[in-house]
Length: 255
Ligand SMILES: Nc1ncnc2c1ncn2[C@@H]1O[C@H](COP(=O)(O)OP(=O)(O)OP(=O)(O)O)[C@@H](O)[C@H]1O
Ligand SMILES: [Mg+2]
Image (cartoon, rainbow, N blue to C red; front, side):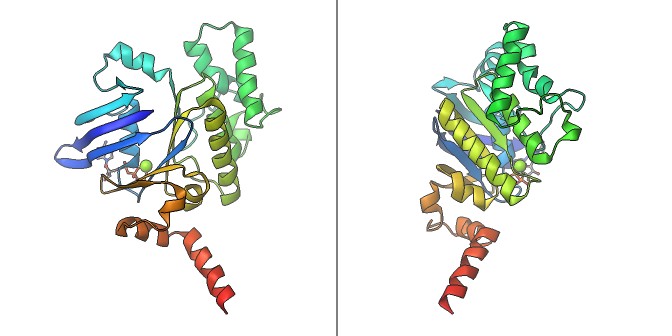
């Protein structure tokens, strides 16, 4: 479990995160939702140590990440898998080399073991046969799956995904959401996904934190999100394409 306590982040005199308190649970897809500019990416970057919080605590299974030494933080990062906006693959490496990369860097496995582990993850994301292709030769959805395989190749306890569906069509987004959700369950990972995709919210939102203007305004699951008693969240939900479609269908049926 990851627990965030009284987390603040400012850039100069601009406060971007204000007193965030929340918990992200093991074996669950935890979603951070909110409008563009709400502070989702900054929050995740504070969680993984790419940004230093102005104050507050981030506890990884009771270990306070913020207070750790540089060495301890590097060790903690080995327990984290990350998928950032865009897939950030190495263009000059093949699919297999991309997925094997973290093992080449950080594991003491033999070359054969690294290949085997990378292949296992490639198979898991249904990319068997694409091992020797380069990122430029495969679709955006396939690139995302390579990024997922690379993020889980070290068996992380925590998985961070910033807008994993950006740039993907709705059908491919669904495949990626299901894959992330299945992998989370299979390996009992604490997964945190930033999204403003309402389809994802309704599909895999087991624990949802809603952020507006840097404040955690609401927390709940997908069954509660539609009826939440929070005006800003209602506005976000009702403005979504998904909600408009639901309304259209209801209106059609009422005729
Ligand atoms: N390095 C930085 N320096 C100054 N301000 C920043 C920095 N990074 C982010 N911000 C500001 O913090 C606020 C939150 O940005 P953030 O990227 O976290 O939003 P977001 O919720 O991820 O939005 P989106 O959905 O568009 O990705 C924005 O106002 C942004 O301009
Ligand atoms: Mg963002």
